[in-house]
Amino acid sequence: MPRHAPAPGRFAPAFRRPVLAMAAALAAGLLTVATPSASAAATSGNGLCEAGYVGLTYDDGPTPEYTLPLLSALRENGVRATLFNIGEKAEKNPELVAAEKKAGMWIANHSWSHPNLTRLPEEEIESELGRTQDLLEEITGTVTTLFRPPFGSTDATVKGVAESLGMTEIIWDVDTRDWSGRSAEEIVEEAVTVQSGEIILMHDGYPATIEAIPAIVENLRSRDLCPGMISPTTGKAVEPADDPISP
Ligand code: ZN
Image (cartoon, rainbow, N blue to C red):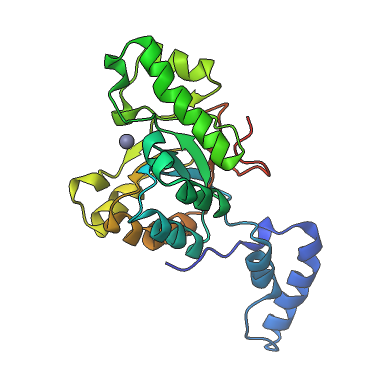
C-alpha cells in the first residue's frame, strides 16, 4: 500500500499559504508534479505516527544465529524494538547485547534461565530477575525497567519481585506464535491485527520472524502507526523518548 499522504487540513499554518498557491497553480495547469507539502512530510517524519505507537518485542535472545540478522532487518526498516533477553544467554554473548543496545533497541529482562517462575520460591525468583538485571546493566550501562515472565506465566509474587527490582511486568496483546513453525506470511497476518498502544510478541530465534519484518512495518506505516517504546509507567507502547528506558 502507498504511504499515507497527509490531507491539506493537517498542515501546520506555515504550509497553508504555499499549498494554496500550489492549488492555484495546479488549477491553472501550471504544475503536474508532487506538491512540496508531500516532501515536507517525508523529510520531517511528521504525520506518519498520527494513529499512535505499537510495541515490537522479541524474546529469548540473544542468539549467536539470529540476533545480528534480526538487528539488521530492524535497522534496514527504520524501526526499534524491545528485546527481552535471557540472562544466561546474555552472559554467553555479551557482545550481542551490546550490539542490540548500539542498534538503538530497548533491552529488557526475561529472567536468567527461562523457568516457569510461578513454581519457584520467592528467593529463586529474586535471583532469576536480579542476576539478569545486574548483568544487563553491566553490559549496557542502563538499568532495565521492563520485565516479561517466561511463558507469560505470572502471579502476585512474581509481579511483586519485579516491582521491588524497579521493573514493570509486560505481557503482550498479540501473539504471533512464531515459535510454532509459522511462515513469515502467517506471522505478518497475526502481527498486523495490532492496535495503537498494543504489544506484539515475537522471538529472537526464527528466520521467518526476521523475514516478516518488512511487511509488518509496511502495514503499520499504511495505518499511520509507528513502532515505539514500551512505557514502564503504563505498560503501553508510546512515542520513544530521548532516553528510551528511563522511567
Ligand atoms: Zn521466552
